[in-house]
Image (cartoon, rainbow, N blue to C red; front, top):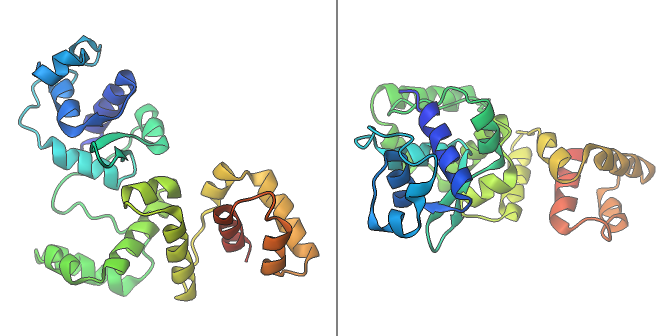
Length: 237
Protein backbone atom coordinates (compact mmCIF):
# COMPACT_ATOMS: atom_id res chain seq x y z
CA UNK A 1 0.00 0.00 0.00
CA UNK A 2 1.42 3.39 -1.01
CA UNK A 3 0.72 5.96 1.72
CA UNK A 4 2.47 8.99 0.20
CA UNK A 5 -0.83 10.86 -0.23
CA UNK A 6 -1.83 10.13 3.36
CA UNK A 7 1.44 11.63 4.61
CA UNK A 8 1.15 14.66 2.33
CA UNK A 9 -2.35 15.35 3.69
CA UNK A 10 -1.10 15.04 7.28
CA UNK A 11 1.69 17.54 6.58
CA UNK A 12 -0.78 19.95 4.96
CA UNK A 13 -2.97 19.83 8.08
CA UNK A 14 -0.05 20.46 10.45
CA UNK A 15 1.24 23.32 8.31
CA UNK A 16 -2.16 24.97 8.23
CA UNK A 17 -2.74 24.46 11.96
CA UNK A 18 0.63 26.10 12.63
CA UNK A 19 1.25 24.01 15.76
CA UNK A 20 2.16 20.46 16.71
CA UNK A 21 -0.90 18.21 16.97
CA UNK A 22 -1.65 15.11 18.96
CA UNK A 23 -2.31 11.99 16.94
CA UNK A 24 -6.02 12.13 17.76
CA UNK A 25 -6.28 15.79 16.79
CA UNK A 26 -4.51 15.12 13.51
CA UNK A 27 -6.65 12.11 12.69
CA UNK A 28 -9.87 13.94 13.59
CA UNK A 29 -8.96 16.89 11.35
CA UNK A 30 -7.94 14.63 8.49
CA UNK A 31 -11.11 12.58 8.62
CA UNK A 32 -13.46 15.48 9.37
CA UNK A 33 -14.47 14.29 12.81
CA UNK A 34 -16.07 17.22 14.65
CA UNK A 35 -14.98 16.13 18.12
CA UNK A 36 -15.31 18.45 21.11
CA UNK A 37 -11.55 19.05 21.08
CA UNK A 38 -11.56 19.87 17.38
CA UNK A 39 -14.39 22.35 17.77
CA UNK A 40 -12.99 23.97 20.92
CA UNK A 41 -9.72 24.64 19.10
CA UNK A 42 -11.61 25.68 15.94
CA UNK A 43 -9.72 23.10 13.91
CA UNK A 44 -12.97 22.50 12.02
CA UNK A 45 -12.45 25.95 10.46
CA UNK A 46 -9.24 24.88 8.73
CA UNK A 47 -9.40 24.61 4.94
CA UNK A 48 -7.82 21.17 5.28
CA UNK A 49 -10.51 19.91 7.69
CA UNK A 50 -11.82 16.64 6.27
CA UNK A 51 -9.10 16.50 3.60
CA UNK A 52 -9.02 12.71 4.04
CA UNK A 53 -12.78 12.31 4.52
CA UNK A 54 -13.87 8.71 4.06
CA UNK A 55 -10.66 7.22 5.43
CA UNK A 56 -11.87 6.73 9.00
CA UNK A 57 -11.08 3.03 8.82
CA UNK A 58 -7.44 3.63 7.92
CA UNK A 59 -4.83 2.79 10.57
CA UNK A 60 -3.69 6.38 10.94
CA UNK A 61 -1.45 5.65 13.93
CA UNK A 62 0.50 3.17 11.81
CA UNK A 63 0.71 5.76 9.01
CA UNK A 64 2.03 8.38 11.44
CA UNK A 65 4.58 5.87 12.77
CA UNK A 66 5.70 5.09 9.21
CA UNK A 67 6.08 8.79 8.44
CA UNK A 68 8.20 9.20 11.58
CA UNK A 69 10.37 6.25 10.53
CA UNK A 70 10.86 7.94 7.16
CA UNK A 71 11.89 11.17 8.89
CA UNK A 72 8.92 13.08 7.47
CA UNK A 73 7.16 13.63 10.80
CA UNK A 74 8.70 13.88 14.26
CA UNK A 75 7.64 14.07 17.89
CA UNK A 76 7.54 17.74 18.88
CA UNK A 77 6.61 17.49 22.55
CA UNK A 78 7.20 14.26 24.46
CA UNK A 79 4.92 15.26 27.33
CA UNK A 80 1.95 16.26 25.19
CA UNK A 81 2.77 13.64 22.54
CA UNK A 82 2.38 16.16 19.73
CA UNK A 83 3.88 15.60 16.30
CA UNK A 84 4.92 17.95 13.54
CA UNK A 85 6.63 17.77 10.17
CA UNK A 86 10.39 17.81 9.60
CA UNK A 87 12.49 19.67 7.05
CA UNK A 88 12.37 16.51 4.95
CA UNK A 89 8.59 16.41 5.38
CA UNK A 90 8.30 19.93 4.01
CA UNK A 91 10.30 18.87 0.96
CA UNK A 92 8.20 15.70 0.69
CA UNK A 93 4.99 17.71 0.41
CA UNK A 94 6.36 19.50 -2.64
CA UNK A 95 7.89 16.40 -4.17
CA UNK A 96 6.34 13.25 -2.69
CA UNK A 97 7.69 9.79 -3.39
CA UNK A 98 6.47 6.24 -2.91
CA UNK A 99 6.17 5.18 0.74
CA UNK A 100 5.09 1.62 1.24
CA UNK A 101 2.97 0.46 4.17
CA UNK A 102 2.76 -3.15 5.18
CA UNK A 103 4.44 -6.01 6.97
CA UNK A 104 6.97 -6.37 4.16
CA UNK A 105 7.85 -2.71 4.33
CA UNK A 106 11.48 -3.05 5.34
CA UNK A 107 13.96 -0.86 3.46
CA UNK A 108 17.49 -2.22 3.34
CA UNK A 109 18.99 0.60 1.31
CA UNK A 110 22.16 1.94 2.85
CA UNK A 111 23.04 -1.36 4.55
CA UNK A 112 26.21 -2.53 2.89
CA UNK A 113 26.57 -5.75 4.88
CA UNK A 114 25.28 -8.47 2.50
CA UNK A 115 25.10 -11.08 5.26
CA UNK A 116 22.92 -8.86 7.45
CA UNK A 117 20.62 -8.00 4.54
CA UNK A 118 20.36 -11.69 3.63
CA UNK A 119 19.46 -12.67 7.17
CA UNK A 120 16.83 -9.92 7.46
CA UNK A 121 15.29 -10.68 4.08
CA UNK A 122 15.17 -14.36 4.96
CA UNK A 123 13.52 -13.62 8.27
CA UNK A 124 10.98 -11.41 6.51
CA UNK A 125 10.12 -14.07 3.94
CA UNK A 126 9.66 -16.62 6.72
CA UNK A 127 7.53 -14.29 8.81
CA UNK A 128 9.98 -14.16 11.70
CA UNK A 129 11.45 -10.68 11.35
CA UNK A 130 9.65 -9.43 14.44
CA UNK A 131 11.32 -12.18 16.49
CA UNK A 132 14.72 -11.31 15.02
CA UNK A 133 14.15 -7.64 15.82
CA UNK A 134 13.34 -8.52 19.42
CA UNK A 135 16.60 -10.44 19.92
CA UNK A 136 18.80 -8.03 17.94
CA UNK A 137 21.07 -5.83 20.04
CA UNK A 138 19.26 -2.47 20.56
CA UNK A 139 22.38 -0.61 19.49
CA UNK A 140 22.56 -2.64 16.29
CA UNK A 141 18.94 -1.74 15.56
CA UNK A 142 19.70 1.94 16.06
CA UNK A 143 22.79 1.76 13.88
CA UNK A 144 20.78 0.14 11.07
CA UNK A 145 18.18 2.91 11.36
CA UNK A 146 20.96 5.51 11.32
CA UNK A 147 22.53 4.05 8.17
CA UNK A 148 19.14 4.09 6.45
CA UNK A 149 18.41 7.67 7.62
CA UNK A 150 21.75 8.90 6.25
CA UNK A 151 21.11 7.09 2.97
CA UNK A 152 17.84 9.07 2.73
CA UNK A 153 19.69 12.25 3.80
CA UNK A 154 17.52 12.78 6.87
CA UNK A 155 18.82 15.55 9.13
CA UNK A 156 20.72 13.98 12.02
CA UNK A 157 19.03 16.20 14.61
CA UNK A 158 15.64 15.05 13.29
CA UNK A 159 16.81 11.44 13.55
CA UNK A 160 17.99 12.07 17.12
CA UNK A 161 14.63 13.54 18.10
CA UNK A 162 12.73 10.66 16.53
CA UNK A 163 14.91 8.20 18.47
CA UNK A 164 14.52 10.24 21.68
CA UNK A 165 18.28 10.69 22.00
CA UNK A 166 20.55 13.72 21.66
CA UNK A 167 22.85 14.54 18.76
CA UNK A 168 25.94 13.57 20.77
CA UNK A 169 24.66 9.99 20.92
CA UNK A 170 24.16 10.00 17.15
CA UNK A 171 27.78 11.12 16.72
CA UNK A 172 28.83 8.35 19.12
CA UNK A 173 27.15 5.85 16.80
CA UNK A 174 28.82 7.37 13.73
CA UNK A 175 32.21 7.03 15.39
CA UNK A 176 31.47 3.46 16.49
CA UNK A 177 30.39 2.52 12.96
CA UNK A 178 33.57 4.02 11.56
CA UNK A 179 35.66 1.92 13.95
CA UNK A 180 33.86 -1.17 12.65
CA UNK A 181 34.71 -0.18 9.06
CA UNK A 182 31.55 1.69 8.03
CA UNK A 183 32.35 5.25 7.00
CA UNK A 184 29.19 7.28 6.30
CA UNK A 185 28.84 10.43 4.21
CA UNK A 186 27.12 13.09 6.33
CA UNK A 187 28.28 16.12 4.32
CA UNK A 188 24.66 16.84 3.35
CA UNK A 189 24.05 17.56 7.06
CA UNK A 190 27.27 19.47 7.82
CA UNK A 191 26.67 21.59 4.71
CA UNK A 192 23.26 22.50 6.16
CA UNK A 193 24.22 23.20 9.78
CA UNK A 194 27.77 24.53 9.29
CA UNK A 195 27.97 25.46 5.60
CA UNK A 196 30.07 24.13 2.70
CA UNK A 197 32.33 27.20 2.57
CA UNK A 198 32.93 27.05 6.32
CA UNK A 199 33.73 23.32 6.12
CA UNK A 200 36.24 24.02 3.35
CA UNK A 201 37.85 26.73 5.46
CA UNK A 202 38.26 24.30 8.36
CA UNK A 203 39.60 21.67 5.94
CA UNK A 204 42.34 24.09 4.83
CA UNK A 205 43.12 24.84 8.47
CA UNK A 206 43.47 21.13 9.17
CA UNK A 207 45.95 20.83 6.32
CA UNK A 208 47.99 23.70 7.75
CA UNK A 209 47.99 21.94 11.13
CA UNK A 210 49.42 18.78 9.57
CA UNK A 211 46.17 16.85 9.92
CA UNK A 212 46.15 17.09 13.72
CA UNK A 213 42.47 16.85 14.68
CA UNK A 214 43.08 17.72 18.34
CA UNK A 215 44.88 20.93 17.41
CA UNK A 216 42.09 21.71 14.95
CA UNK A 217 39.47 21.41 17.68
CA UNK A 218 41.49 23.71 19.95
CA UNK A 219 41.98 26.20 17.09
CA UNK A 220 38.26 26.45 16.29
CA UNK A 221 36.75 25.98 19.76
CA UNK A 222 35.77 29.67 19.92
CA UNK A 223 33.88 29.42 16.64
CA UNK A 224 32.06 26.09 16.83
CA UNK A 225 30.39 24.25 19.69
CA UNK A 226 31.46 20.77 20.75
CA UNK A 227 28.88 18.97 18.59
CA UNK A 228 29.88 20.94 15.50
CA UNK A 229 33.56 20.24 16.20
CA UNK A 230 32.83 16.53 16.50
CA UNK A 231 30.95 16.56 13.20
CA UNK A 232 33.81 18.42 11.53
CA UNK A 233 36.33 15.97 12.97
CA UNK A 234 34.24 13.11 11.63
CA UNK A 235 34.00 14.33 8.04
CA UNK A 236 37.58 15.64 7.85
CA UNK A 237 39.45 12.75 9.43
